[in-house]
Amino acid sequence: MQVFVESCPDTLPVPAAREGQSEAWDALFKRFQLPLYSYVYECLRDEQTSLDIVQETFINAVKHIRQLREDGKFGSWLFGIAHQKIQQHRRKQANDAAKHETFYEQPELENENPLQWLIRREDEKRFMDCVGNLAPPHRSVLLLHFIEGFKLDEIAEITQAQVGTVKSRLFYAKKALRNLLKRELQ
Image (tube, rainbow, N blue to C red; front, side, top):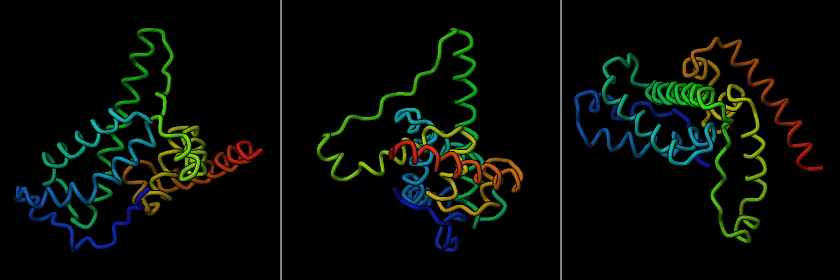
């Protein structure tokens, strides 16, 4: 999994993207598509929905790039759009489930060659499965902080929560994750 760090904002072609240059958007898409997809997928655990949300995120970014005030915060702004799309998707699922009186089931993970999976990714899979069992707000802050490398104040912007709330969610996410991992290793 790729770690995202917004370390070189000067190298991001945000001003050119704002002017509508397709090469700039191509560069931004190439830079952010994988970390954005990884975040959305780990939040939702649905490949097609994750791809759709990444696409919707970039469509919204193109439409609203003029609202971005600080070019150096393009990454956190983009992840904020994706976070809102995830929340909208969860609300829609909850509404649909309530209407049909059915329970939402997590989609099955992709089947891979078991031997390759065990050799290369057994620990990562167990870890990510445990992360997937966290409550959605805890999972989001954990992924944004440790996997994507965002700072607490950036996570607060993305999730539209107070920094104190982000700290609390991160604390409880780590505590819950430790407990899940202990049970997994027993």
